[in-house]
Each structure stands twice: as C-alpha cells, then as structure tokens.
Image 1 (tube, rainbow, N blue to C red):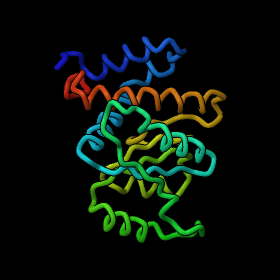
Image 2: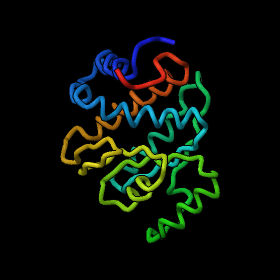
Image 3: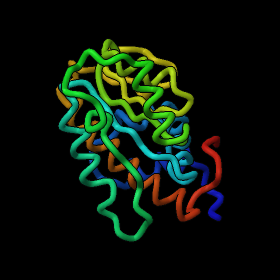
Image 4: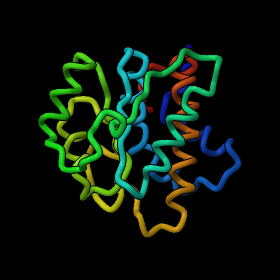
Length: 181
C-alpha cells in the first residue's frame, strides 16, 4: 500500500489532470470526507441509488452510462431512483425509503445531485449512507456547489472524473486507507 494519504493523493490528481481545477484544490478536504466514505460503501457492496432534481437529470444519466465503462474493475451496482418510482412525483418519502430497505436490505447508498430545496435531499440526508452534491445550500454532509456558477456543469464532470479515479485507487489499494494527512 502506498503511504500517500487520500487528501494528498486527491490534490496531486487534481493538479495532474491539467484542467483548471484551482477551485477544487481549495475544497478538496470537503470532498475527501464524503468521497472516501462513498467509495468504501461501493467496495463494501452497497448498491448506488442515484437521484437528482430535474435540472441535473442529465448528469444522473451520464453517471449511470459511464461509471462502469472501466472494464479493469468490477462493475458497480448503480440504479436510478426515478426508474423505481411511479411517474407521479407526489410520492411519500417514507414509502420510498421502506421500498429501498426491503429491496436492498439496507445495503445501499443514496447519491443525490441537485438543489437543496428538492425533497430528495431529505431522503438522502435521512439515510445512514449518502453522497450528496448539493446546489445552493450549506449541508454539512454534502459537497456544496452554486447553481449560478457558469461552470457548475463542468465542475460536475470534473468531480465525476476524480470520483472514478478515486474508486480505482481505493479499490486497488493505491492509497492509504484513510483520508487524513
């Protein structure tokens, strides 16, 4: 196992990428805590339940289509919450949570991408295992972004690229089993 800590590894990755990621360097500690936990959930066999608000639905589709494109690692079980719900958007969150608990035996992680005023944020924050990329809020357990940032969509794609490399690095024991320096 390499003795490079997760936080330092993440910083090196952002710098090596060659894309303007100065914004990420400043926020990497916010990222490290939630990304490390999410990656450990994946390695532990959790199914990823991905969901978003309407504006970030495109990103959910992108993530689902590309997260398993790397054939050098085991497939990651990922499913969209939307695919399991009725078209009617007035669903009861408690019933959704019950359904997920029955279907996945409490062994799932909710990955939410979107605005903090969406009711799906509550589903994610109430669940013991979540990965939240929140817009226009200040959630303690989330990576917070601003929707008025003209580069917000680019940042989502950059975060996804870092996430994919993080999954590989932790899965194949390329970095320390911890995110502290």
